Amino acid sequence: ASQLGTTEGKMSELGGELMRLAETTSHIASDMQTMAAEWQKMLGNAGNAGAADVMQTAMSFAGELEQAASVAMQVNKTMGSLTASATNLQDQDLTSSAALTDAEQALQDMEEATTEGAAAVQELENLQAQASPNIAGQVNASQQYYPIMYFVDRVYDS
Image (cartoon, rainbow, N blue to C red):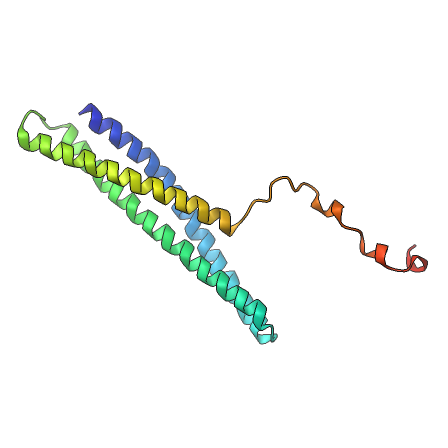
């Protein structure tokens, strides 16, 4: 019974992290899809086919984000049902063969769900990093560029 509680606790903790990442990823995907569609229309109307194609790629990536978030939410839903069954099993007398078999199966299912959840968390973190990269160490990056007046004749610089 204690092993059921420990495994269920680990799974529930991972499930909370998974749900947070899935919701964030879903919001990122929705925003990316909306903005890319808007920009694709504007750029296509302006005759900039190359940039419109880049927006199509962004919309495709937003679809990948949404798909990953959907898979993660499904894994989290499975974790929720396993948590309920583990709670029911903890209250049962595990001295009978049938109850012990059910508990062992629940443990195995929870471990599989935890493994799937950890993989989903890793995938969501990787996709979020691709969606909005963090350029570390780029404090005040504009200092490496000359101001525009540097390239203009000094007579006009006043």
